[in-house]
Image 1 (tube, rainbow, N blue to C red):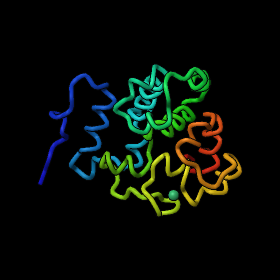
Image 2 (cartoon, protein in one colour; image 1 turned 120 degrees about the horizontal axis):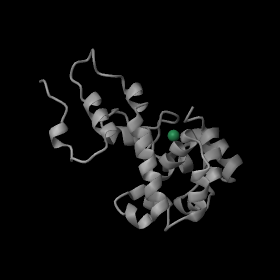
Image 3 (tube, helix red, strand yellow; image 1 turned 45 degrees about the vertical axis):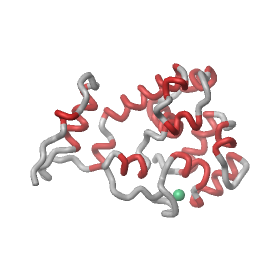
Image 4 (tube, rainbow, N blue to C red; image 1 turned 90 degrees about the vertical axis):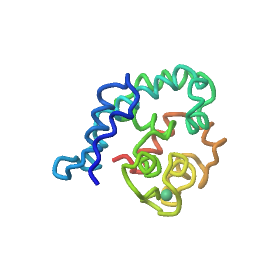
Length: 177
Ligand SMILES: [Zn+2]
């Protein structure tokens, strides 16, 4: 069955980049439809990253609908704001993704219907989320031990980790290369 991009159902007032991403992603014609990998390069994701840093740095009260951001962030955070302001775009995207879960992790991509397998590509044991990578993935256990000082981390433990240390772990995990 042929369906058109569901733009009629999209709320108005979204940034053009987001509409463009939806239009490309739902293109029916296989020859014209971009690959999932190239969709992930779409600038809408940078924009979303920036929006979420805005949300994070404003106040975590505004993120009530965002389960994971709430999990990691407790209230306005000056330290994180200063840290985020000094980052490159790429690192900003990684740290935002880790804190909000809005990053190209398989669980998130599955929810967004960009991919069908939510499992972690490194260990295949659990759905791939930021918490899985940071706290639980068995494939990143050694990096976790050397950087966080523990083989496993729970949410409370991760909340104590400085943002720059999270970024160091993200690099060591090689998940964002
Ligand atoms: Zn894993």
